Length: 323
Image 1 (cartoon, rainbow, N blue to C red):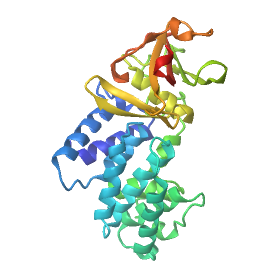
Image 2 (cartoon, rainbow, N blue to C red):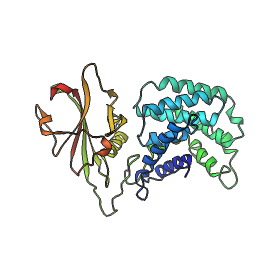
Image 3 (cartoon, one colour):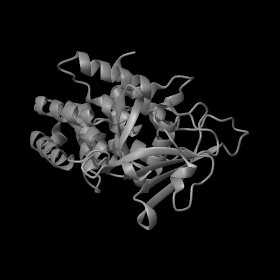
């Protein structure tokens, strides 16, 4: 399967409230990330911005993704389709607040799109027309006018092809592909992680996850309870929490020990002050003056930790010398 088609499949699973991390036992998001990273490393002129949107929707975002999207946009000044997909991907990253310094580039991208398509309603290409409308919808709370797009609809209701219809449908209802983050599923599935438990099981096991900033009376804390998926890792738990609450948004980097988290809730590691994020686990909720004595510090990547039902995990931002 081509990389672009795999990206479309992942989006389709999101749209239908299915889990791309567990599609008949396959983690399509992880496969998409691996194949994208391989293509980026081996292709000087990478031209598939469509892969970054499903990765962002899954919370699998790297700083290098933002840099590559911006670089691609600068090289695609005369390709509206690619520019629009790049704009949508960067908008998704900006809304996750995992990486700073995106708003300036988004404003510049939108200006380029509007200038290039100042009379986009006359565009004959349904793909370009629908994508431009999606970009305008993503950039504004007021839906773009769609009459000119409906004029391209065929008697059978389609827009000439599966891909044309795929791009047109969100635009027709004043939305964009970013709206896949906000879809409503009857079983309360958080984006990027759906439940694979039997229908007869009404209450899947849970994991307790907290983010602490600071120490003592000045400690700021946020907590959430996340369903535990079969064979799920703590990285899966973090993605589920991030989809529910912006205080759990995070950034990570790949290391030999797995995914290393270096920023949470918009707060990165501070080398100058010797304040770092550390992950701890406990079989009960830690409390007291020195709660770290009740906890075990984790030293491997979050994608290599397999929680047990009822476990408590705490990502704590504090001085490394305070233990």
